[in-house]
View 1 (cartoon, rainbow, N blue to C red):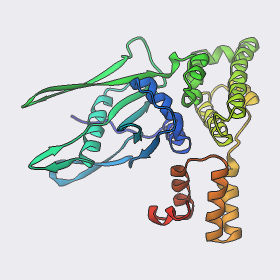
View 2 (view 1 turned 45 degrees about the vertical axis):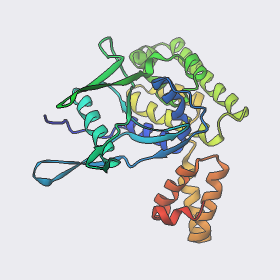
View 3 (view 1 turned 180 degrees about the vertical axis):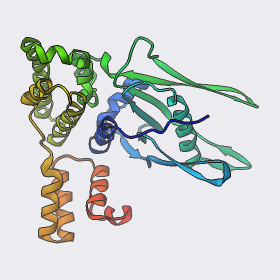
Length: 312
């Protein structure tokens, strides 16, 4: 079976950025998808997104998942999540490929038995229609019997603002604009309807401020959510200037520009060692998780994973 070539989209990039920079936001999403009861204090361990699938003739083909990680609670569970702007026919094939390769990466051979554990998989749909299923299924017919498992589906457009904040699904906020996508033309022509949209985003801004003041989220998390919201808005409303500018007028423009530029300038000014230490200190003060700090200083200063750990 041939697989369609999958290219990264701006929405995939936002999805991964949220996961890397504000990883705890994914825990309420996991609770919602799988009926878990994680508190949010659990440790999240990310696995490599790149996997190499063995092909005929001994060749390997690279596949990149949206995310794969473990949550360490009373027990450790592995999860594989994908973000889709819409359905496509190759999606289930990719889930099977990714899932089995992830399982093989950590497979154990003992007493002539290979044990593989498939991750808990789920998909977030940013758009959906009447035929979009609530659950996907993979069925494997093996010589030892038939095995099947479900892949839960989350449809972001189904969640109201009240539900998003009530269930702590802050991860969905950057994608909330998808629920208004079919009405963009109306907003462009009708100032009253555009003002109604702006009022909804005023609610989002105020709610985020409340959570910040209550200590539920950090300033960095609030800034990241708004920055990612603006990135989604730029792409989904590229043809609708009134929608873009109207929402931005409420939420503000790009606010994380300082992160890369300022930190890099400090690193050059103070020297590499002092720069790295200063970077780590700034990111810690912003409330960024240690795992994300490691990734950032590795990328910023071209450090190996081992070399970067001494700065934490």
